[in-house]
Amino acid sequence: MTGGTHEEFREYVVARGPALLRAAHQLTGHPNDAEDLLQTALVKTYLAWDRIQDRAALDAYVRRAMVNINISWWRRRKLEEYPSEEIPEPALAGGHVYLPEQVEQALDRLPTRMRAAVMLRYYEDMTEPEIAKALGISVGTVKSTVSRAMAKLRGDLTIPEQRRLESRTSA
Image (tube, rainbow, N blue to C red):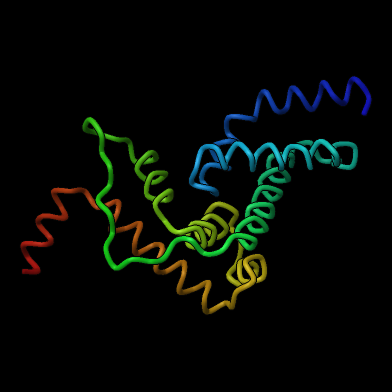
């Protein structure tokens, strides 16, 4: 790569790095894994830099690379997390947490496949058949996984006072 191209890439990473790291964290659920994921995706982007014609689509290119890499990593790992009937209480340290932070925390608590399906569906705006192909599962499994994930997220994001009221009325 030429010096100018190298500098252009460096400026892109400096400008967009924090936002891309947040997206990587949403995919992995762990800060260290997110850094590894973003670094791997940026290496792929750097190697393809001269072939990327539309500089406005760089974020999409990096996010797609992160999704593909994360899926590849996920497929290599054995399933270490199992669904549970009980939804853990959200950790609201020190009072009020803003909704985006609550959503991020709730996504972090989802098992890997559920988080990946939700991210692909709602962050990457992929269709169910596209998600099925990307994750190597059936369309029906995509539908049930996203449905279960959304139910967990809804339960996790319910306001604690509302949870107490709902449990009193159902008892």
